Length: 227
Ligand code: GAR
Image 1 (cartoon, helix red, strand yellow):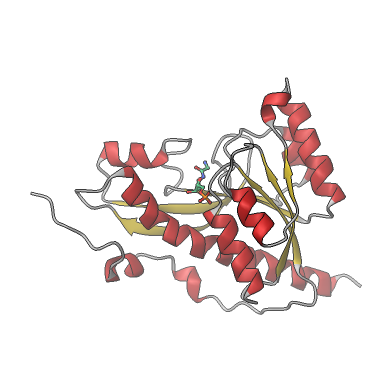
Image 2 (cartoon, rainbow, N blue to C red):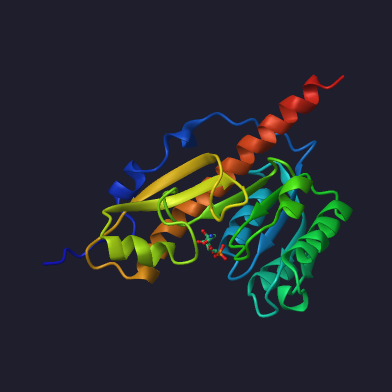
């Protein structure tokens, strides 16, 4: 028998990461300069852009790089007057030359930290070495479980009872690297991939902002220490 479940419940909230309660200082005098990379819908892009516009995040999106001409994320950028650059990976014969072009664009835009919000391409050392420990990714599972592109389907196939999302520093292996923040959500017996993804994304939109806020604060304190 399957138990009908509400879309967002008290249990969802009970499972969120305790890091939410960390105290963050909002200093908008020196916003963290971000480069965002996306392949698709762009709901995480919107969450970040809106948090900045609403003065909840001391950051600035210098540039959006997207790789699919049809990706809806570009419309969100245009609506918000955020520079967006299409780099179609299909026009590159090697991953390294594609990544080098990304690095050139990010550096020209004076980007300090790179945020992958639904970037569905493997990365090479060319990109990782250009921004050492300065690239984060959001993934719809509790890593290290279920890396890769079918994370939600795999979680359902395995019958997990709790799933969630992870923000982590990017390493060469897909969806690997030191974990910064996670949030958990319940999985209900009658969940479909779309339904579970929606529940996870509600938490993604929260923890991606939390991660960037912590990075921005760390960055601000480091700058204070430099004479
Ligand atoms: C997000 O759920 C993100 O976790 C996932 O892509 C989606 C993008 O959604 N990323 C990965 O699977 C990375 N391996 P969005 O375009 O609505 O932000």
